[in-house]
Image (cartoon, rainbow, N blue to C red):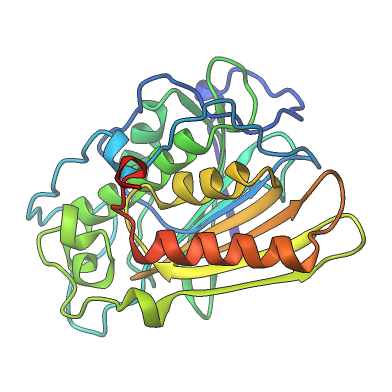
Length: 292
């Protein structure tokens, strides 16, 4: 059963958008909020990164640590059962005019009005929201656009800001989720009991997805700034990211990118270069270029 929630008062109008992803030198925008699963797609356009400097989590503003609040957004904060795994989806594929964000945390999530207000503070409009239930729990889904253009989000830095905002809101209103999220170590009231071994958790694979593109899959330990860093590493090798999906599932981040090189699928040597570059960076995220 689906409950549609009209957000007409926040909507500035929808327009088709086929713009590429670009890195901008503007200041990162974060507001108090929280996060789940993400997918990224851009109408067969590529990520065009015009900044040559490396973006990493060190370039981003810090997110305030969530308080030990007992209030819950229309949901239950009880700890009488097994705490479910939080999942966040940022989906750029399913709607050509809007970025779709989906949040799941078992049956504990309420209307998430504070989360929608936090997204509005990032300069976004929530043009549609709905809730549906299945065996995995309650799914809250928002369709969002940029307030200044009425178009879907096309900036990896802003997409990462959305991700961290949603996660922080989740930690604020559901502090019991802190031990289930990698971000709980940085922003929550209780860090995960076990840390993920990056070497063991990291899996990278690339396969052809037709003659014109390849499918890159990356699974690794989650951390702030990961989405921006992955896109930057890939495009630094002159590989175009045409679409993608970024999932935050508890302690892990799972990413799928459709990539191409000069309009063609990646040849084996280039696949190996990308795989080696990503694996090296993910295992050593704090390595500075100046150290070489």
